[in-house]
Length: 543
Image (tube, rainbow, N blue to C red; front, side, top):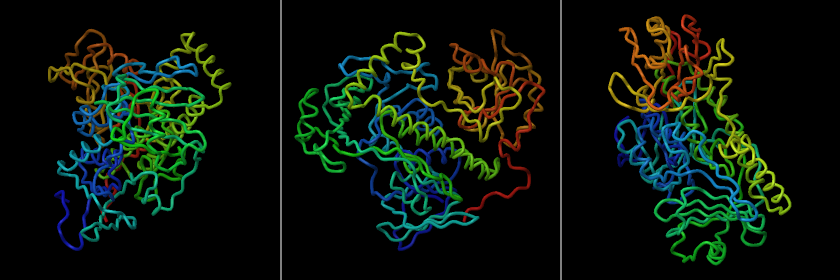
């Protein structure tokens, strides 16, 4: 596969390692990750251009770390506004608490960041069009899908004629009305809410706050999220009879709702829509060689700000596994762990989003008064304040089943993500972020372990070809010639992240979750737990 534009012929057939259906943020993020892992990827998008609708408006530090891995950090950083969290207001209009990062910059990026989806989509598309391993087909609609043991064939229709795409795997990132999901005959389970909300994205707005505002006013629950360059998102609960879901809201309604905050003219409205929220999850995320990601796999109310971020997590979990399967490091069985690992957290996030909507956005005045009193009582205690302000109500990401091996240490965390502290890279004489040192593949860190114990480990982990580094503990520098890449703490971040693993080896997956840890001299048998491919096993074929 090569090139970026279709030939002007009646029929076109393209072959790739992976086909991605949908050029929204999740689809293009997945394509960029796959390309960064060295795979050839074709992206199929039915629309002729990227979206100009500012749908998603908040991106978190975990997602920015993923964009860093995809080679997109500089592009994405320049279109965000580094934010400071979310302030919640009670029924009386007074602020109750502000939710923000417990450990600022833990993942190497600002915590919660307003942005405009059209800006993100343009940056992603430009990146893919410049990448030699990516081929983007805009204005190309999927009409049918067929698969067998050797690959998947997509039948598509473009303005220039029929297009066939053949790939080893297909990622369905084509939204809530996914054609891929329809072709696979996969349903969704959950519920749609009866409440109707108006969402208005406006320009030339006077709000300059770097935080979102959730107003728990039972008379008119609403959300305000300022963005860059005078843009602002307003969301309002609509009372029965004001406007039906799906109907274009009249300007006078939008003007009236925004009147307490600003004057408004029609040309200052970038987008205004009405809709009901969904809280649904696809019944299956993998069918053969096809996978569902993002809104194709799960949809949630916006109150936790995790819709796009959950889709980015999907891509981060799946894409390296596909690369490792096609690269001969893992068996196809490893791809089953995508749903095993991601579904519980996605379901919990959907449930949290719906619960926040019921609590924060209630229209019951008595319930709102009890809510505010309870929250203020919590805030008065150190534990309660930490629970709310550090958002410890969010579902944790910890994999207990999947490509993880808990080993012999119940008190040593596995299946958890490691942060990205700043480290001093002795070999290069630079202060760098951890992922800049370890790269996009597997990594083995020895945390204050003996300096002469790395040789046997390199052989045992050869199938994964990990980057190996020694984390110096305390104030002494290793001097043995057998010590690999040495990393030194510079601000306490590396010591804090590695504290649970002191005196142990830590094997990090490409998505920076801990796959396993063990003491020197106790190398675990990782082949089965991590679905490592044994010598002589056949690789998946492109159809």
